[in-house]
Length: 115
Image (cartoon, rainbow, N blue to C red; front, top):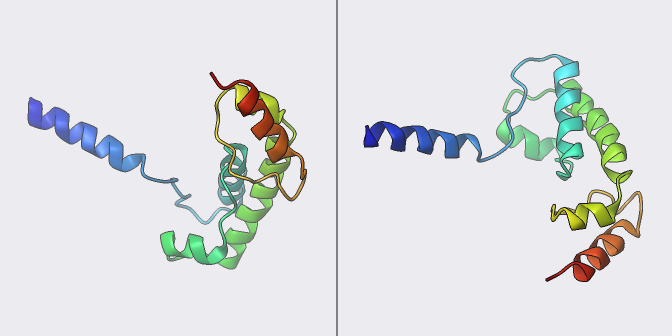
């Protein structure tokens, strides 16, 4: 029983190691993946970075990912940086090019709410 439980926990940890990339070639899957990543605040990956994880990545798939990520970035950056800080969620810099004050507002809110 203990070995079984340990195996299940180990597999669960391995599954949490990184993003789960789309399996299919559908551009909508790659677009959704990019949007989800950006809405979670994850920085945009380059095509080279993604190719290291997905050996069969095509230019079309990366383009769909990129378009989805851009949409997700706009959604993520429309939220309040203060609320992001109050909720103690990390900020990884994806709004710096859209709103140069986002990081500053986030950091100020973190300092104001530090216990």
